[in-house]
Length: 180
Image (cartoon, rainbow, N blue to C red; front, side, top):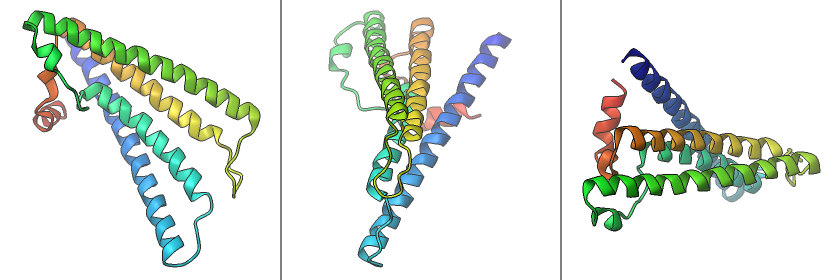
């Protein structure tokens, strides 16, 4: 019992760290975009590389956000198909759906790593300040690795505990219980 609760707490801490990274990066993107708009339209002084940096930072935020979504299952889902089955069969449909997402995430992680490698080798950089692009792609790849981890944990949880599609429908109540 102790190992199970310790493992669960470790996963919850990892998920909280992932959510903090996603939130901080999204905040950075917001600040950059607002600063760019103010600089361009109010001060007539554009922020150098704002367009490239905002796209790259948003990519990082999306990758890390995907990791949070993969754990909580709070994405938009259409479960008409799954609800046509009995609860026991619904569990297998749910497991299959999450396995598809796991495979997709694994393939995307692999392809983004190829992009990291190519960007490092090619020396790609932003237009104005010549900032290297590979650290941004590496951050996206790390976010996808986190998504791979949380998705694998979700699949394991569905397989071992049998969690269902409604598990996080009341996400606010569930999150407050997890943090206690």
